[in-house]
Length: 135
Image (tube, rainbow, N blue to C red; front, side, top):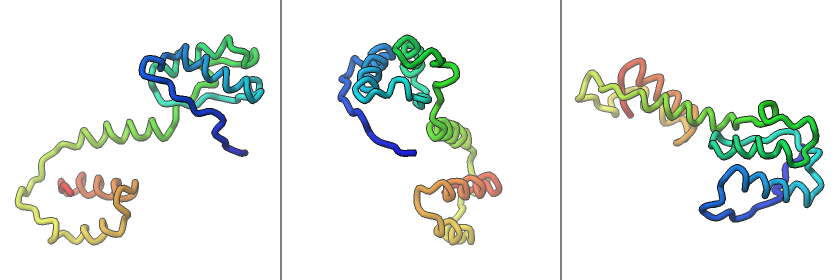
């Protein structure tokens, strides 16, 4: 399997409607004769992308194209939204307001994980939930 960028176009501010996006995607697929070879459409959860998927149904993608079956939400985007919602709900206050991070042995473990990594975030959440500690 190969991945290539086949089209990159500035859309402008008012042109992010699903109908307009479907027209542009259809044009690009036509340029490369890919309309019949498109397996699925992976997007974020913006409403315009659901309209885009429905609009593609009549754009020559074959009789099989069904937006309910072939329009997939990007798992990374869904996971990021779920993680953000989860993290926003962890707004508890520390039991000991005089907590000193430097005295906590878990800080040494935390520093082993790269900044911004998923594993570091999970470690911070687990320590926060277990000990009500904020980093």
